[in-house]
Length: 180
Ligand code: PRP
Image (tube, rainbow, N blue to C red; front, side, top):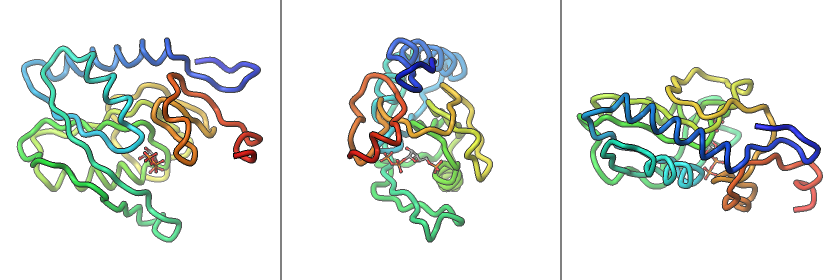
């Protein structure tokens, strides 16, 4: 992770290395099991795709699509489910996979929701953690990078649906935001 003239950046190489480390840890923790990775769309799709290919345990995958709470519901943290899981998680070892934890409201809601569906175990893996923005506690078991409170794009993260395709993560400067 580097801070240089061009702004904050996590390079493709750094991401690759860290994703492998997370996958190794998950493979170790779930040895002999078949975890179900639940990706939260849209942001997590690239991270999940890379993470699952580095696992040495058999894993399955499912997705949840959510829309962020609007301003009015920010305090409740209620999240609208746009697409629910396609299968039951009862008795499964579930790992929620997210690109970023910010206020924590989305994950808190989803964690509590999935918990009611009686998985055998439930953990969270997030590539990025903007800890200083946290409003509610959320148990994040696997974290890729702790990041500062900057507008970050790339590797699944967007601004107005753009930039998700970047192989690296970088800061979007206020000037760039203005010009979009
Ligand atoms: C991002 C991210 C998390 C959420 C985190 O999603 O993927 O789901 O925000 O924020 P929180 O911790 O403050 O709740 P976003 O709403 O940008 O949607 P996207 O994944 O479709 O880009």
